Length: 343
Image 1: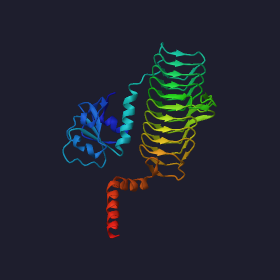
Image 2 (image 1 turned 30 degrees about the horizontal axis):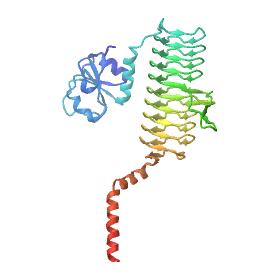
Image 3 (image 1 turned 180 degrees about the horizontal axis):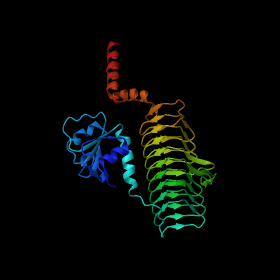
Image 4 (image 1 turned 90 degrees about the horizontal axis):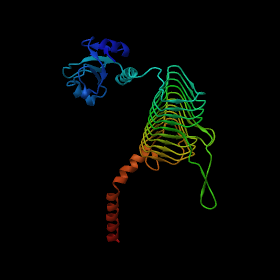
């Protein structure tokens, strides 16, 4: 892609300060910018690089006041990070193919492929699959029978989507995600062995969901494991059978959610959080990294920390005391000795 400062400013509803005809071809980090690139300053910690960057264009906020001269052409915008998202999306589209289906892909004759779809090498699309228009499916993807995928989705290399699962519109699924593997269901026998419980449900993913690399979402035993619209999942997350995650909830890497737990809307869950099964987490709950949640959270807006997780404020107070336990123990011993001397 090639664009002038004035064209980019028009796209972002920004204001140019400097040469409106300067041309850029790609984005770059502010500390690594070179001639012909566009960078941004969204965090004051990086302001020092604004005065040394070689980027031809620099996105800044309307209220940014330079402390030193800047050689780059500035584009002032109301929200730098939102503008960067638009800009990266625009540059990214330039690299997308349009309506190419590889001769090396296997597509069953009963599959329904929408207009302008891309299906790359060695992807398998089984019987009665339905794929919406403008969806891009990369190489080595397996889509089993009766799967439904909406429009404008991006399925990255190595994704496995098991039979009967459904994916909505505008979803992004990163490499090696597994959707619809069997839930962990086993019934104990009298002799100490375990009998597998058939997992006959599916996974239902609504619109505008993004799923990070190597995440696994198990199919339901019966019914559906549900990921509601707007959910964002990081890499290496485990979601068990019959879990439901509410709208616009975000979950960081290495979190595990056990079966049949219901997560509310607009929750924020940090990395390496463990959540037991068969509980409910209220809307707007915030769970700090490495916390362990073993019971339902009933009050909306609760913030939790620790393992087992406590209310955030209580944990911080307790942690202050915990760090001082050796000193506190020593003082108690001294008091005990003083009392003995008085006796």
